[in-house]
Length: 119
Image (tube, rainbow, N blue to C red):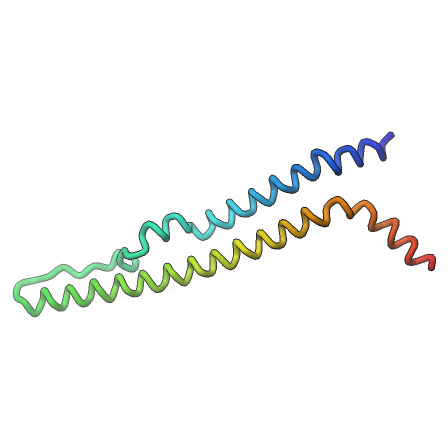
């Protein structure tokens, strides 16, 4: 009776739960890297470092170059983090889908190991 309940859970709710966990891991990974926020603020200055122009053309040009440089650094860092996030998401998906595909065969592993150990 207990074995029947185990197999009913394993191939029913357990397998469904495995897919739900995969979706949860993907969401958590995306939230960890804040991909949506990074994409929205892709051209924002790095750490909000902004130079304000003073009097004269020289100060205006210096502030413009400083602000452009700050935005360039922000862009590069955000693109790098987005690339790392995509790699992490692909890794999480590959590991998750592999574990979900292997899931139905896991109850057979002890039987296989027993047979392999005897012969």
